[in-house]
Image (cartoon, rainbow, N blue to C red; front, side):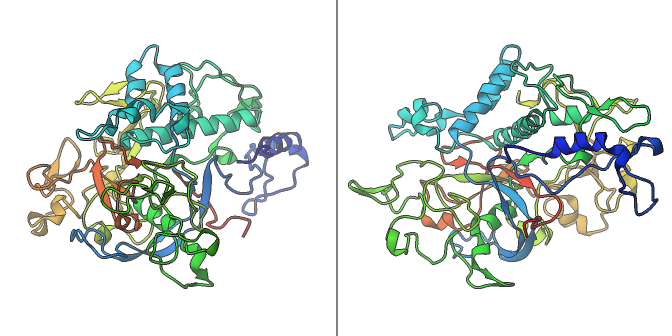
Length: 510
């Protein structure tokens, strides 16, 4: 992220020089930024700012799926050619230090009145325990001792990782507004006034404003930053499975013109796991378990110097500049797991897991602020002060589902793979409208993924990618895939964040 930005300065200059502006609409010929003709504002904009910790991954087409033998015989990663849009991804896995910053902020804001929120965010340190190993030191020290501050955070389930991404979005956007001089610092935020991007855009945030933005409205006054100003960054999120796999290969380093000269097995060239460069000859390229009982090699010449995890900047980055895309810890991605996802997903930006939502509003059209809520298992599902979201539904006429052709209900996790249309009964005259589950507004399932009865897969099974310090080299192949319940965590699964690239896939620099 740039230390000094000209966006707000240019925005202020726009107001001061409005009367001198000569830029006109090519459609209507009316001048932009002119209060006398209505005040339609067009601010200066170059391209999306790169958020802190992120690297631009230029997208493209690649063969997603199996690149190594299918040693498990699961046939769950059938090769298929897809296209991934350009996006941003964290250069490294999220560190313990990064997560402790999140816990510190969460404690300051919520712990006094809502201690369950801090408890919900805290990683499970007990994942290190093994009934036949002495791992108690990791239980006590791994997350909080400064010796491990640059090591990847573990013991975080998929839900916690997603919550971290949401928190990071708000903190980065708040920082941008403070940096631009629009907001003032808020050293003691509470559950009633902490900065939330959705609340701010809805005009419901009441925190400290340092320099209001003059409005071009003919009636004068001031306004908040809007999405149209291009100041806010898109949401941080987990990468999709396709994005993670594409980024891991780093094939941009093997591309000449429109031709990929060498396909990769790992995030580096060749079929070995040691560095072939004469300067670093024989050194391990990733942190993994080489063989039975060999976690790091012999004393005096440790092969990967990692008994468990290693600092996130260890080893060599791939050609995108991403570290540890093959080893150290496996990583959560957004996707719901299905064995035959490659056959069902779209060719462009493939992803399974869509549950379409919309912001909930009252009868006056005003967005509703949420309160703390718990699900049937006593898990927190919403935080106080956030904008409330709901699934789109036929119960709300404004959702216009009857007129939609691209989707008919909110939850599309099972679409073409587990819903009634993909079953035998669904092939005999079933339509969009029958049979439906009235509680969810989607077609009923006939039990293809009836958890623990017909399958160990359900709609909470999330994909995780890549090898870890306790895996063999096979799992470092980016095309391999595994899954775990989104509510569970382990000592070898971490995560990194991603962000959508808006606008040009290559940027003005190209």
